[in-house]
Length: 509
Image 1 (cartoon, rainbow, N blue to C red):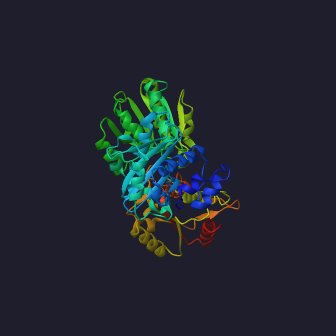
Image 2 (image 1 turned 90 degrees about the vertical axis):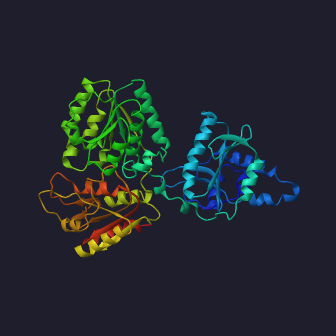
Image 3 (image 1 turned 60 degrees about the vertical axis):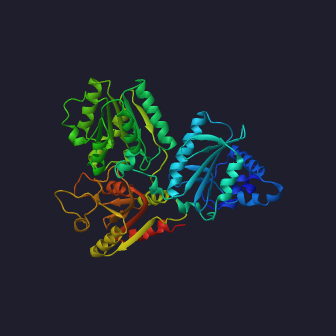
């Protein structure tokens, strides 16, 4: 996406053609949602700036109006900026409003604070403005994050002081991993509050906390697919709840180092595994119980919590779950997600916006599991497909990519029986298996699939039985692949048919 002149955007009168007009100017690849309020807002900014130029300096207005990125969204996150102009030392952001929003001046200030957080990653001085068309008022947030009314003369001076305007694809400047923090993988950033919830997350959080505050119900469900931000939202809610009472988080998996950091750092918070929670004799010391990865609970563990809920109705319980992230036959048969949904008076909230998953990677995973999927992207630069004929070649490729900063996620092994992947896992075992990455995420991931994976006549991925008859290879593969945020490498070992099929996915367009 390239910058355009505000003069060109403000002079276009045909509303119906504006989207196509802007697209051919900016070369954007994403869809632009037409907002007439923003267009007349741009006109207001242009007119306001023009008035600050005398007749003798009239020609300078053209330079000042150049170099703006309109309606840019940070990929994956969806954070949008109305107008951005990027120089060698400063970034100028102008937000456009028809009128003061319902939240008043405070809402304008909060938006600019969020914008500042994201723009500081560019390592430049950030200048933040909001223009309100209704009363023709320009606001500026100063370095102390105080909102004040300013003039178009001040905006003009800031624009004129910018040097060496950036005029390439703005997407190159924003690295998603700078903003997608995980409470488990980057607990320090979480504890410092270096993140923002998206609108979907914020809305659900507010509804849950409001409902708890007014005792509308005692049970809550939080569901959504991989990458929708369930874990971040659960821990963000927990941190708020800890201000009002003792909070227990039950993690239905293996605890990570991040869990320990949070346990040691947040007052009134206890995090334990589902296995450890069996030792709790009295739950009455807790006001809130939150269950992460609840779809992996055993039936007796879930039943115990239901009993606690019945005996201690004042305890508020929140279950976070995803039916597609089960890893074993027992978990599928237990169907804890359905049991959660059947709890009396439960309020279930669904996250729908994917914020962690790279769209290309998400598309590739869908098409890897089902070649009939219509989720096709123009290209897949985030995917590296690697072929290995031998075990030795496979190990070399894994080590090469580990050296490049990739995390190797291996299939969880059987404690009693050998598997196709045992030698590879032993030699490259410095990273994680699929059960140890539950709830976590990584910028770069590499996995291996061998000749035990094939496609059915219906073009769906199939696999042989895992040595542990309770585990399902396809589920373990899905769990590992969906931990990826930015780059995915897949080694296809001794399986030319599958390699050719995978190549056809990334080169189908």
